Image (cartoon, rainbow, N blue to C red; front, side):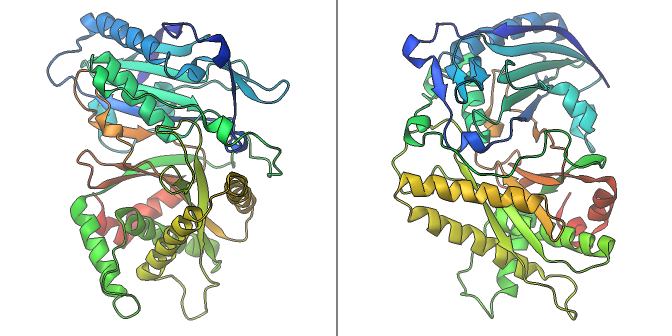
Length: 438
């Protein structure tokens, strides 16, 4: 599938940023992030013939105009990252990169089957160097059928996926003329959690993590499949846990995938090494600290659940065992962060969690499984005026990872898994995975 760029331009805020807002300092959590670009792609069919290619220029003009208006609220995104005299964002209104590309094909070719990582990269490119480059890159890809795929990339230095979600929702609301649906984002986290000197292991360079070829697949867990997994977890735990044990959908899906990957690792490596499950943990509603509404920036920690050393008589972990590990990991983390009332202690706790993750990621002593949940971020509500997306995907990292996104109905989960081709083939053949996915 050929993707051909037609033009690219810089879109600036419609109103210049005020002089007292032209230097936005990073928070202590922003400082810890890799200088890579995280991304998401929204796919829209032309269900009602609203986006024929002959009329796409009008659609692009409307999107550009509404983007310019939206950037007046999200002004740091139109700036540039500066490393001199301390890292900060120069809110100089140079603009975000806005690209139009034509795709030689039908959008349904991307909606069915496994996506190709190269295709995803062409639908949503990003700069190789953060310094001096646009912090946000948006590419609107138009298909022969009238379908549209919008690739949105943002550097992790200025925000997490929550930040991207409220930005995309505000932009879409402005585009369709629904002023009441816009939010007023806050960029006050840097004053509450100022940058400090951290001792954190160096992140591997982006896009050069490991030396293996990776593929990406989507595993669909319907609401019915998740209900069955929850019931299975409750039945397995009835002798050791209270009857009101209610594992979440993220917990049971994470446990099923973790069990399959642990079995694959132990089979391939020929040794029964312990495993650790890591998960990003959105902290906006978990802390006993006063933070503004719609806080933009990075505000998450890394949480982990460790297995015990496997015994000779027990080669692979049970499903209920991993459910308990993940459930306790999340429950304990909620309790821990809810009891923190000091900002300095909060920053240290988050910093230590990321430092530990970086250290373990470079180790070969354990099997590590990494999850990020983008559920409940409203990604399927991004409506630019031609309806909700028919699919939302992440843009895979070049390492083994699992991203959760709500399905179209908001009750199931799409697990976007990146792994080596060998691991992916084994994962697809795993009986438990086959039994609960479509």
